[in-house]
Image (tube, rainbow, N blue to C red; front, side, top):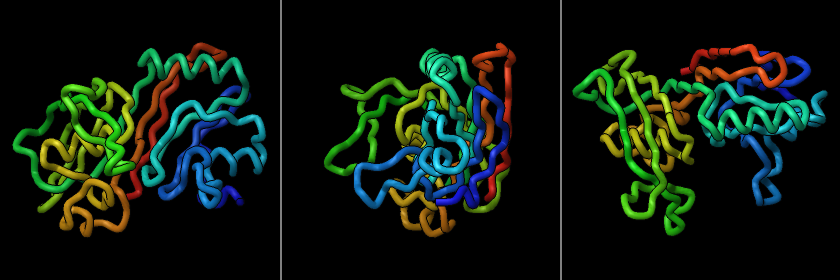
Amino acid sequence: MPLSNIRIIHQDAAVLVIDKPTLLLSVPGRAEDNKDCLITRLQENGFPEARIVHRLDWETSGIILLARDADSHRELSRQFHDRETEKAYTALAWGQPALDSGSVDLPLRYDPPTKPRHVVDHEHGKHALTFWKVLERCGEWCRVELTPITGRSHQLRVHMLSIGHPLLGDRLYAHPQALEAHERLCLHASMLAFTHPVTGERMKFECAAPF
């Protein structure tokens, strides 16, 4: 598959910073018809050495970081594990929060009976923390900036749902009104900061949401 709508934000000998489109897996899925993905397209189109450092959900668009050698991959993976990176997402959420900012500190776990959904579980869930801030209020919905401190699967989607503000276009978690309010999941990785694995320079990239 060609790179087509995959935009390269930055590249050097050690890293690739990519703007991933919505409806594209980060890595191959288990099913045979889920082999098309970001890493495969990059490896087949000029970047055979590319290695995934972290992932974005299939429907989530925005900034994703890849390494171009084993040492860089190891160091960047460590930074994500040790929470030395900074991430921010832009999202459209249903409703109007009473406050302009806040946090959600609720443990999450995968829920096999409703796969691939995740749920809040105070007994068996893993710690998850998200900060949110309203950027714009627009009638029935609002634009928010979401800052995950932890990196649990579906964390931002479940946390916003838990406070009564599901993301627009979210086929897994939104109620009918929020689902029908937009044709795609309105979640975009808009900022990523990390330390370059070779130069030691602190790097920050931003990418505006397409919605």
